[in-house]
Image 1: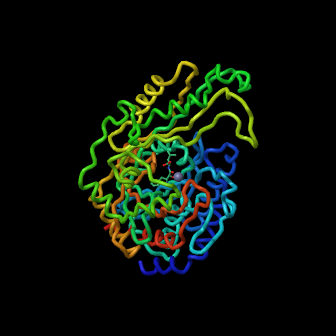
Image 2: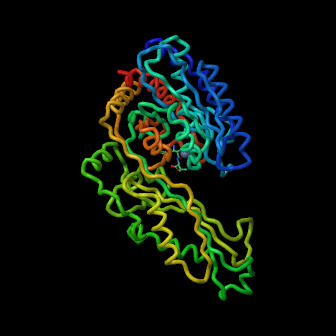
Image 3: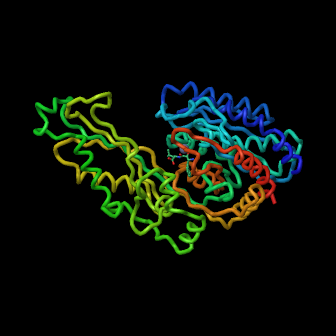
Length: 456
Ligand code: BES
Ligand code: ZN
């Protein structure tokens, strides 16, 4: 183990250069014009994995390709443990470009951070695992278990191809557990095992009004404005205590236990600092819950995008023909995406005025995920975290979603260990995304130590 850790320490500069090469790919899964960049990024990953001694290949899917890389299997009769390492090479759209201090796909080092779209979510995090494996292979240190990396290209758009892929390759991917570094830690002194993630249900709601944009002076007042109708409709979703008013939306949710509330309260939290960090004049959330609970253990209904009418310079006096909202709800354990979709549909239908035509498309969905921190694998992870970071790990509930972890359980029967490396100020999904290079190095150590602990 000494030589593995030593190897990692000696090669940090090169690792950062390589991570820059990875971040340079414009692997934006949501935007069709980047399909070629997605392919190129997958091909680069395969070449890179091969260069560090893994067998690797691109596997085609109906969507973006998946990269599979394996450690060399030893000729042994002993049954060795097998772990999957899951990550994603796709990134969120970089817009708005003008808010980036340096271009999103021109990775730039400033201080101890590497800036670029995907640096933290998720390229830097999954690359840390590849570097740990490289250290084993290059120092001829025997890996105590077999490892298979799955790096997909559709995580940011709902992982729709990967579930089918898991079904098709169940035998090949059968494993003792899945390791995922795609979550966060509260700070460098708070390494974390995330024990639950929120689920999600996505919608696109369009209200159609007049058959074309109308002169608002000539016709305005005599016809419904779809943008106004959309605002009124969506304004009905919450009450003035921040609670979601949709009947049956909350069906199945268990109350937070005292133990869970205590766990959530273990990480120091300062309201004022949090407010300042977010840049808002006041915090806002569901009454009766702390901000920490609101953002991880309670469901939400959010508008992610709102479009209608004229968006260019100056003004244009029209009644727009339509208005659209992109919406996602975050779900907590107990909620069923299908039931939530039904409840949301019924609510919007009931409250939509007859003056517009409503079109509601339900998109991707996933249940929340929860895993016990007391399993042998979780305990192994906690030991590795402690040693790699030199601090006592915390157990987290997190608000983000990684839809595929439910399928790892359902299809492969495997629990997922969520060992994130993202800091709260990494600006995931925002302009100026960054990855802390100190955490990058610790993540590599964590990965190296983890295989030893898991094989014990
Ligand atoms: N890395 C995130 C998930 C995450 C973020 C988990 C923060 C825990 C804390 C992942 O890349 C992500 O953004 N997932 C999407 C999934 C969605 C598109 C289905 C998300 O949560 O919005
Ligand atoms: Zn993401």
